[in-house]
Image 1 (cartoon, rainbow, N blue to C red):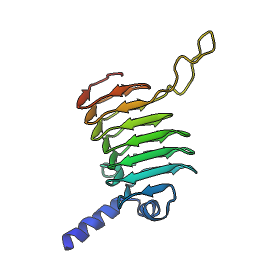
Image 2 (image 1 turned 90 degrees about the horizontal axis):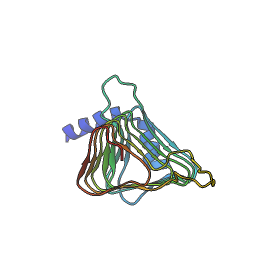
Image 3 (image 1 turned 90 degrees about the vertical axis):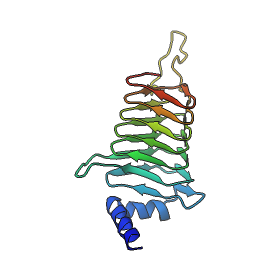
Image 4 (image 1 turned 120 degrees about the vertical axis):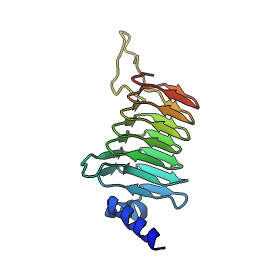
Length: 194
């Protein structure tokens, strides 16, 4: 009993405690179907625009975890207007990572881990399967974030959804761009572009 109390105190000392209270008890942008919670560690910045929603179920969401003692590195989570993040099974997002869900975009995830210095930006839809492991420095986009038009004026690089299946390991410095599908039990390796 006493050990459990000390462990709980140690955890709360690592969190942005008032943000923890706000996100778990007062924020209208967070919708839960069970007792899952969001744990915003120190250095975590959440920017939730009006109309954006995080649907949380299955397990806790840890944001900014594993930060080195004395480090000032930040973990950035931004949901723009009407963006949706459906998180079934929770996640662990390490320090110095960035997740951004742009206007009217969807991030649909089951349990995943995201290591430091990784970036995930959804402009349309990104879907992560169960037990996806995103290594250090991985970049996942579903858009080029600018339109390239041919001589007829049609867009040659349209946004396209990204699907990453169950049990996929996105290895160090992988670049994964729009329209990509990765299905089950795969390892994507060093400096690989998909």
